[in-house]
Length: 221
Image (cartoon, rainbow, N blue to C red; front, side, top):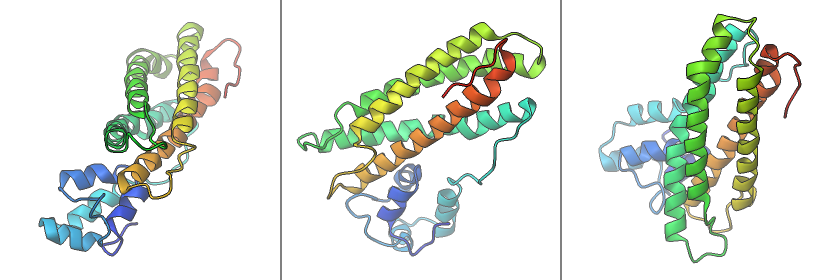
């Protein structure tokens, strides 16, 4: 739970998605982010309570994935598909900004913005296939043999796994360099969360959901 006394820049780094909220309210979280949230809100004439609600609402309530297929699929859609769609655009925007402003730095993550854009595009196409074809089939007929479409999804997952490795390399394991600005640090925090969420997402599908609909279930990491 974030409070009015915390510094804007600290919230931006600790809470992926906060930078988008700050931008909406024209609150400078980078160069002038060393002030308490209450002071920043007052300076912009922003309702503090509403701002806190927006920030704290970015933190999903902890919940274990349900086991039943009819509950697991809606959980995956809400917890991962929609969250990925919300978080990628802001990560891409920050990556472009960092690459533009710090292009001369030897630590600059050159190519990160392009990588994130490719990941977002390919993931969106992948998720649409699941949402419009694969998941409805799973929800409607548990006896279906879905080997072929699932194998296609698993190949996409393998490609995404390689992209996650590339993202980790470009960000030095999500560790910003000494003296990195707030946007840079917030970018790496966002990438770290994307990595963790995507890996958990892949685990739920590869190792729990998909094996229920193939002839020879086989765990995949």
